[in-house]
Image 1 (cartoon, rainbow, N blue to C red):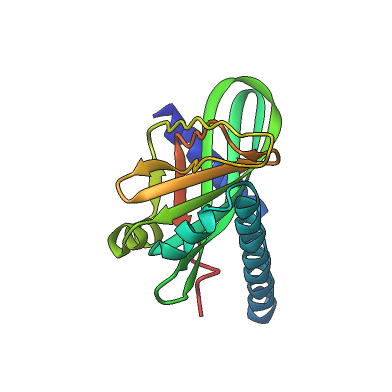
Image 2 (image 1 turned 90 degrees about the vertical axis):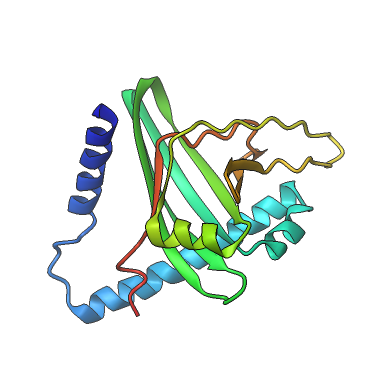
Length: 196
């Protein structure tokens, strides 16, 4: 229950400071949304290129999947509380349609620091893709992956199964993460950016 209150509080803070009640004209909002969509697509492409750099075999896996979602996330850990927020794009390989997504998590634990990571979700079929995009998804369990990388540049397929039909690559600035923890993270559709 404490985690839900923390996540709700973080969400409320994000909404209050996001300009939601800014009084901007519809034209200004449409232009900001268009710019944000372009930026998210650029970040999504950069995330895929980063993945292909560290795991070249992933390119074929991404292309064969029903769809994929890329997320860029920044987390902050301030002594007792931690919070993460991110933005992403889900892409349907069958229709070519993009859906703009958000993510957030919060927790309690000792620590201090900022972390930046990227994530690529792969969806095996239409059902899991549509559920992720339309109903949102919450990761309630910790998923760990271990991988060993050779100095020669070879890499293992480090995608891990996080739910039936959903696999995940998690990357940091140094490459594929040896441990992928997504516990307590919620993913949902960005209603504003998905308006036509």
